[in-house]
Image 1 (cartoon, rainbow, N blue to C red):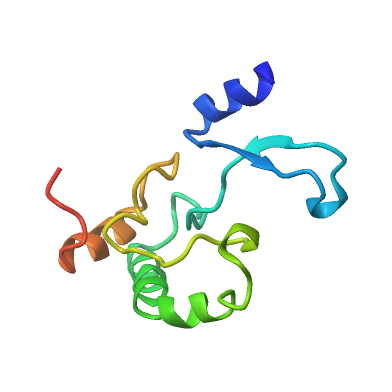
Image 2: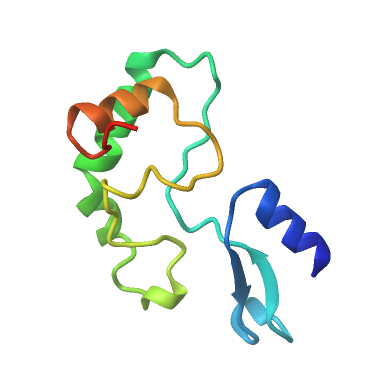
Length: 112
């Protein structure tokens, strides 16, 4: 448990438990919560491409959510509803400048 706690701090992730019985687990299993939307990209990704990917994720979020709505929320591999006012927060890594530009342009991110 000590290692998982260090990882939650290192990666700025919350602690989550996979409940006994899910995925054939014989006990509750501690793990990192990756349920927020984080797309990992290279630092040298063109800004316009990161801006476009972010726009698609935000503007088409209802399509993405619809793919998982048949599952109970506690069994869904994603967190929904996706909220563009918060989906950029607490991801454990800096936002790409193109993604940050999109969130600011659309008013989802307050001036920090």
